[in-house]
Length: 267
Length: 243
Image (cartoon, rainbow over all chains, first blue to last red):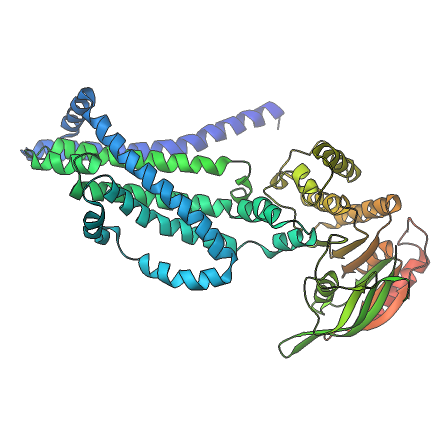
């Protein structure tokens, strides 16, 4: 077979592959919106909005700027809560993974705290931190710290022994052992932990804002319902929450492209 | 004190009730290349891990340059079957991993010389997952040699490679050993590899393993396995292994 035809086939296959990943989900979401539209239009529901009404409602909020304030408020809480959780979870996870005594001492406590739903912490959070920004930040912290910590610990405990032996063989310092072997080896696990943690954080911030605050996307949902059944804004907020969640996960996944961790994702 | 660099002195080791290594004693002279062959699962790797200091013997001891081995050290580097090239470091950073002291530029220059020696010039910035199995072995050899160890321990170093690449790496290893003097202790199940490379071949028994026989390989390098003496030696070793 001639070379250029093979080249062309290659290009076509790549385009085909990309289309295969984009077209089906777009079609699926598009047809769901169509079904939604048809059902609502036919039922003549006085409350449930059509996609067009949702878009118009969201547009109005975007124009007067309040939408951005709500988004910003939610993102800010996630940033702080998730950031604090990361700063606590990774060092603790590394320590627990490396030192058996630390693991044996701390793990039972953490495994007991872990299954408590963040929703169950809401009353306690309100009692301790009031209804300001601290409550949701605390809830985000408590819900995203454990997945990241567990993932980091598992990462350290499953480092392939041959790498640790190689490091021992060369007699490197503890500093080199940690910065050149242990942390890079665990980095892919830490990124997985970050993806889980950030997903949970975003879930929780909305739940927390529904109960205790006057800004944020969670608040926007409750407020829209309470202030005259504005279900167009309720749905708009829900869609926004979904889209932002997707973008946050996509941003974390970019970390998987780092040269230092690519080894883990190529087969 | 003998002039042997490595002295294995009545080493025994078991796992639970299972005796794996049984009173093994032998010595390796400075600069000598000794190959150890034995049936699979006989405890060859355990023995080498004890000699390298990664595992403790139940009884007996290993001495290197007269000092009892209590743990691994940079004077004796292990190269094993599955390799331990760090996948998160580039070729250059892998080779520089064990280097300490000196200035950054001196370390780079030294690393470069060894990368060149193993034929990987031009791949300094590549990551291991971009390399073939044979190239990974070269990285590992360069990383070991760059710290100038007196001893190399090799645990079936080329057995994960295909037959052709394995032959090529054996030739390369011989070439490198002509340039630099090292004491080598090689574990292999490949009798021809042992004959091609080693000065002396120890045949181990089945588990619990003992040194069954020793063969001297008095053939000049580069060796041809088609040589009748090499063939006779191969027959004799295989007979010892029960084949």
